[in-house]
Image (cartoon, rainbow, N blue to C red; front, side, top):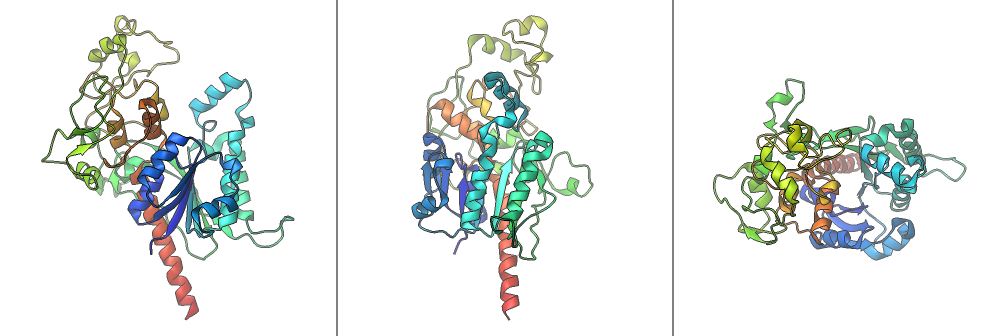
Length: 404
C-alpha cells in the first residue's frame, strides 16, 4: 500500500504531485483560496481538498473529513510574504507596521498543531531561505523549539518525540532537473527512531564547484522545457492545442508528456502585453534586462529606474530560467520569451516549473499564472519524496529487525 500524506497550504499542488511521482498518495489538502483548492482537487483524485482558513479548521475536524487520524507524512509551506525581500517591502508600504507583527508569520504554528495531532512519522516545512535568518533567526529558532517539544506536557516535562534533521538545508531546484534556479528551505523533522534522514543528492550540474557534480547530467534549459510547445502569439486565447513538435524530443519533454494524451495540452493561453512593451521587446537580446537598453528605448516604457532595474528580462534559450514567482500573474515582463516578442504562456511557465502537461490549472488567466508561480516544482518535490520514502523504508526495516 502507498504511504499517505496530507499537504497543508497546498496551493495548486506542485509539492503534492512531486510526492505522488515518488510513490506516495495524497489523501488531503488545505488551501485558503477556493479556485486554487479546485486545481489541487482536480489533479489529486484521492485527496479530500478543502478551501478554508486553517486557523478555523481544527485538526480533529479535518481528520473526520479525510476519514482517518493516521498519516505517514505531512508537508506544507506556510505562506511566506514577510520572509521574502519583496514581501517585506510590500507589507511595510501597505500597513506601515513592522513585518514581525504580520499574523501570517504565525501560520507555521497552525501547521505544527496538525503535526501534534496526527503525529506523522516525518514532516516537511517548505519555505523561502530567509525563513532561517529573518528577525535574526527568531521565528526559525522558535519553530525548531516547538517541534522538539511536541510530546511533552504543558509544563515542559517528559520527552519530545520529534527531532529536526540538522543542518536544515536550502535546496536549489535546478540541481534536480527543474529548468529553473529556485532555492527553497526544506525543514525536515521526524520521530526519534535512530534513523537519519538524508536530503536528496543533486542529479544535475549547473554551477556547483566540486568536481563530482560536474559529472552529473547537464542542467535542463529553457529550450529543453518549452521547445516542443505549440506556436502561439501575444494574447493567445485557445487553451488546448496540439504540440508543434512530435519527434527528436528531449528527455525532459518526454517526461512532461508521459502521462498526457500525447497529442494536445491545455492552459497554453498568453496574456496581452501593452503596445509600448511590444515596441520594446524587439530591442532585447536573450539574457538582457531593462537597464541594458539604450535610454531612448527605455523611455518608450518608462519605470522608476532606481527601483525597477530588471523590470523587463528576456529568458535565455540555452540556460535554465531564473525563479518564476507569483508576480508573473501581474504582467510577466520578467519572463519574456527567448525568441518571440511576448511573455510566457501559462503552460510554458508550468513547464519551467516542471508541471507535467496533464496537470490542469483552474481559474482565470491571472489565477492560473499565480498558481504556477507560487508552486513547489514537482520534480523538486519528487526528489524530496524519494528521500522521505527511503527514510520510512529504513525505519520499517529497523523496527522489524528490532522485533526479531
